[in-house]
Length: 292
Image (cartoon, rainbow, N blue to C red; front, side, top):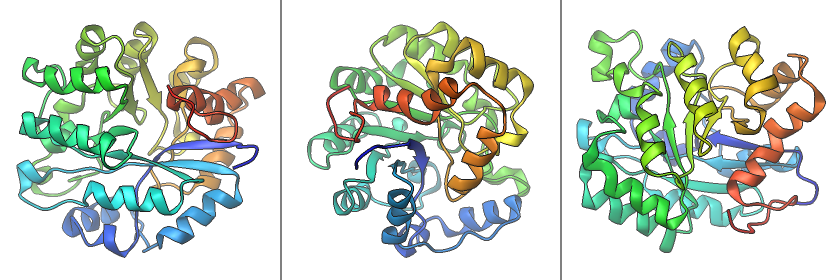
């Protein structure tokens, strides 16, 4: 794609195939967010980004080991990317608690499916602490293979307002648990997704301290960003922050308009919406893979 203007680092599929999985969880999330998520064919989603000269990174997720519910196959994410390679890149889903099986699936995602990273890992739903020593083989494998990993950070819309939060345990999603992982695997590129409320300061501290930790700003409308977050984006960590919508939670046009309205310097805006992602993903200015 000639002349990219942005890379959305955090997008979920919402076509009929994707919506057929984890239906109850998605319905509960829609009720919590106050919006009914529409069914959007993959081709239509690709057109949204293509028309705006943007790329998008498709995230997958799973909590099958805890809930027993099947999740969207990584193979389908790969099919979507293959159908629209000018627009999409894909991350695969694994469940860290599956041990060697999770490692094998991560390897398969890269070698057989052509997916470029792993995510979205949601520790609050999956019930693991990222700094658990038992998970080191997975993080070491991703590090050795140059595969970045994206973690959900902070509050979870999943389970919000339901009895017992549908089993979701928020404490597992504290960003500080990523600090040990980053320290022990310094070549592993880690993204802590979302502003990570109520542990936003933890996320900012880890990203400032660890060169291999980045933040994406998905899932929250920019007009609700805290003054602390905006200050860090402007001055402390402008090279460590990535644009993301968490679509279909937020529409790309709304996110971009509200982020622009924050009044950040033009060079900071460009780094957040484009340049940081190009570097992180190893892309040239037209979105072609050059290696990370």
